[in-house]
Amino acid sequence: MIRARATAGVLLALCAGPAAAHPVTVRSCDRLATYDRPPERAVSYDSNLTEMMLALDLTDRMIGYIGSRERVRASAELFPKAARLRQIQRQYPTREALLEAGADFYFAGWSYGMRAGGEVTPATLGRLGIPVYELTESCVRIGRREKPTLDFLYRDLLNLGRIFAVEDRAEALVAGYRARVAAVAGRVADAPSRPRVFLYDGAGRAAGTAGGHAMPTALIEAAGGVNIAHDVAGNWTRISWESVIERDPDAIVVLDHGGGSAAQKMAYIRARPGLRDLRPLKENRVLILGYDELTPGPRNVTAVEKIAEFLHGAR
Image (cartoon, rainbow, N blue to C red; front, top):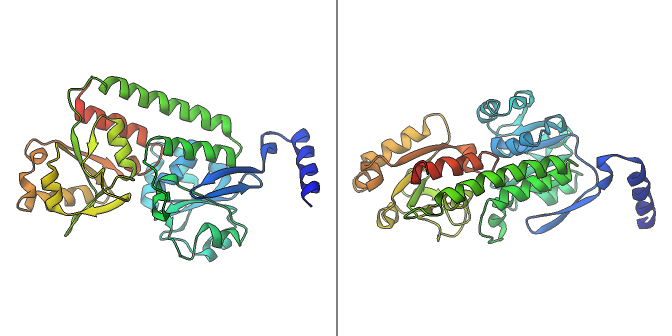
């Protein structure tokens, strides 16, 4: 059977177009995942991963997405083809929903549409003939402790390019992103300081924030700053408000999930004793960015540019 498959592969390579490179194997978290053919009925999880697919112009290879309809509809402002996609489920998917939709590929991550030990994982879907590619930033949730950089985004885009046989498209996109980030690095290289930034994700008894393995840490560093929680293990996590005060941030970046969440978060810290005395609140050093700018996705590059200008001004 192996010999027959190899022979068939040679014939395909002689007769076919770009898809002849298949099967392709890429690293997906702790797996080497093989994809026998370019997907034709792909499903993505939520707006940020969907935007990666849209940035690669893969709409015609998708049947829909899992997650927030509001955020994916908002994606149409940047990627008009988002309006063509249908919501398959709002919450984490069931295997039945993916099967009923006829999915032949699922792009998701750990805590981005999959949970370790849950119903939907690469192993459970693989047994049903639905291959999975895992978001690189999410791999920390299953034990990979790799420091995040913008290379996480580039890696995912290039791997998707190979999986969908649009490598040239992915390489051109990544080259453009690299050039924009390099331009920011050049502008902030001689900045007099690296401001300390509190990434404010959630209010409550503890502060929701981005730890050392979350994409905002990479974005803040690329913009010439330092995440005050860079030494906290994990990606999206919580630290005490006392720790926020002790770490004395120079600036605050607020993650806006939409629906007035940024306003609610700011009202919380402005009303709480101790927090309302933080220097960035008194000096109005607060930047609000959207979910798709701060979670892994193509808007990360724009976020780096915005954070750099926020921290260092036009240089």
